[in-house]
Every structure is written in C-alpha cells, then in structure tokens.
Amino acid sequence: MKAPIAALFVCLVFTCAAQKSNTTGTRLFNGKDLTGWKVLNGKAKFEVKDGMIVGTTVANEPNSFLATEEQFGDFILELEFKVADGTNSGIQFRSESKPDYQNGRVHGYQYEIDPSPRAWTGGIYDEARREWLYTLEFNTKAKEAFKPNDWNVARIECIGNTLRTFINGVPAAHVVDDMTPRGFIALQVHSVGSLAEAGRNVYWRNITIQTKDLKPTPWDDLFVVNLIPNTLSEQEEKNGVRLLWDGSTTKGWRGAYKSGFPEKGWSIQNGVLSVQKSGGGESTNGGDIVTTEEYAAFDLQFEFKLTEGANSGVKYFVTEREGNKGSAIGLEYQILDDARHPDAKEGVVGNRTLASLYDLIPSVKIPRGQRKIGEWNHGRIVVYPDNRIEHWLNGYKVVEYQRGTPIYQALVARSKYAVWENFGMAERGRILLQDHGDEVSFRSIKIKTLK
Image (tube, rainbow, N blue to C red; front, side, top):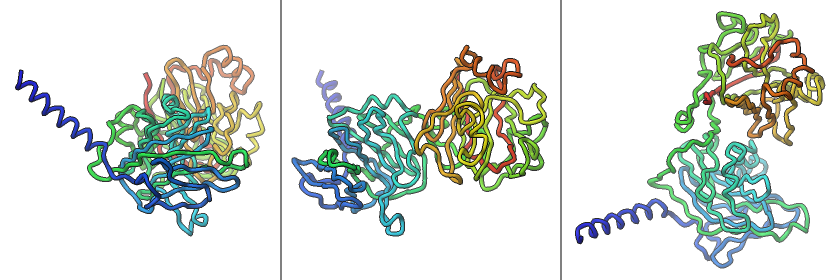
C-alpha cells in the first residue's frame, strides 16, 4: 500500500500547487492603507478599516472612484465586496481619466454591483461613454448568484479583446471589444442625491490581480456581445453563431422579388451595408433585400444606425408569395427615428415606433435605451421553436409575443395586415432589410439556428 499512498501524496502536492499558482497574484491592496491608490472625481470617503477598504456615500457629490495608480492591460482580477442598504456600486477596469475628456471624468468598463431587484451584478457598463454593453437580461441565471448584505466574489478576466465577468463563480457577462486595451482599476462609490442616502457603505477586501501566465476560465455557452464589427469570436463560433452578412460582399443576399442584388440603392463601404437616401417611398429605389436562405427558429443579431428622420425595418418570415409591388410582407422589427418621423404617431399606442412589432405590438420604452441618431444600436430578434418571439434593443427585451395564439390573431385582425391570409404564420421565411427611401446602415448581422 506504500506505493499507492506515495503516488497519491505526490498527486495531491502537485494538484495543490497547480491550484495555488492559478489563484495567486499581486495584491493591489495591502490591507493597511491606500498606498498605490488615488481618489478621482467625487468626494466620497474612502478609508481602511479591519483590513477592508470602506467607501462611504456623500450627498450631492458625483460618482467617486478610488483608482489604482498603475494601469493594466491583460489581467485576471479577483476581489471580495459587500454592499449595505441597497447601495449601487461598481468596479472600473481598463478605465481612464484624462483632462481632455469631460474634464477628467472617469470613463471605461465597469463591473456592475447592483443590489436592486433588477439584479444586474456582474453586468458590464461603459461608464461615461456607451452605457450598457451587457445587461443581465442576456443571462438571467446570473441574477441569482449575488448575495445581498453579504460578501461576494467578483472575477474579471480581460485577455486581448475578450472581457468576461463572474459573480461567486457563476459566469455573468461576455463582451468582445477593443475600445480600451489598457487602464486603471477603480472602486466606485455611487453618487447620492439626498442626505438620507449619505453615510451608506461599500466594502472591498482581498483584491488580487494576475498579469502573467493567465489561464482564463474554459469557454461556456454564454451569449456574447461582440462589438468588433463583422467578426465572430471563438465563443460565438462554439455557440453556433455565424455571419449572415460577410461585411464586404453581397453573398447570401438578393433583391426581394429579384434574382440578383439591386444594382442601385444600396452601398457597401468599410464594413457597412447601407440603404442610400432616395427621397422616394418604400422600395422605389433599390428595393428591399432578402437572404437567399430561409429560416424557421433562430436568434438574429444586427447593428443599425439611423440618420435624422429615417425609416426602415428588419422583417422575418418573408415568403415573397404575395407578389406585392411595394415592400415585401413579413413580421417587422421597426427601425425608426421616433422623434422626427411621422410614422411614430401612426398606428395604435405606439406600435410603429422603434423596435416594435410593426403595426401590432409597441415596444417597451426604456429610458436612455436608444442610442443617439448617428450612433450604432444593437438589435436582436429571437424566434423559438414554439413560436415565442422576442425583440431586443441595446440589451433590453422590449417586445415578447407568440405568433398563432388568439391574441396574436386578434392583433393582426385590427392591423393593416388583416387583408393577408395567415399573415406571419409561414413555417420558414427569409430575413429582409427594408429600403424605405431613407439612409440607414447595418453591420454585424449574425444568426444562430435554434432547435
């Protein structure tokens, strides 16, 4: 028995050593004072107590940050945190503060700490820039991982252009982005607007960072938000996602009711597919374009950018059987400048506004959920095998319905589509990008087949 016991002992030694090397790193906080850190922006209080960094809210101060003096590129960061009294907070990473950007305002990626019922702890927010990059609506399972009024473990992996977060060992967010390859780490005390909210605390301890011999967590099946145009990450490919438009040619697309791609009315430049402004009505210039393939259940992603007053749409379950002279018929994710286009006031209760199921179901309006005109929005349409369908806009689910139900049929009966028999009920159909005579751009069009 001595040989097996010895072998087991050696194995345990090497296993423990391997585990230790995978979790050790440089301590960013020495447990005694704030050496290596500096306060930026607001005047919230940061102090060291019992081996912890304690942040305290101060009324009528902007967001305050305790930032590392050192900057980091690729790293794995782990720390423990606790929030009391429902206080919102966050952990900045690859972040910056520059005099020429909003007078030194801290900006960059943030690991969200959200003890509210929304429960987005571990989501990725872009502080003072693009706002939400990855809400936990993309990954609702992670909402259950946060422990209120208790210590939680945050893990942030930044390797190349891949940003991944974890809460208490549970995968939370996965973003691919290259806007900021390097920056500081910072602990946030959120602004509060009243004296009643002043004096609330956030606690951090055991702050450790690895910068060498990084071993990322193995790939999982998490939804990926990839902000590098027209590319697929390794995780996306593993998840079965593929490009529906290759970013440079017309391959896989043709004109609606046509055998080839329109000779005018559409342009492809610098990885962007655009409808050209014609000043005419819908489908009077180049006309709509459709995929050469048909789809049943799928998860479709696309980025789109509006110009002032523009109107367009993404349609699905398009069959071209109607022989329509205008735009081809199909269920439509509305793309519209709600503030300037008159169609936003037509229809019923706003069912022709941005991200709505056009003329049938209005989208939920999320404050600041829409990007400014000229900025890229992230759209998503999910069609499940049981005919449940979702519309998403910039990380928010804004429409949810099931086609074929009595409610769906009632909505169709009172809409402009009542004249079309079995509208929207085809088993399979094409994806369509609409030419409505206005300039609208698309990129990063991707699809995953669902079974």
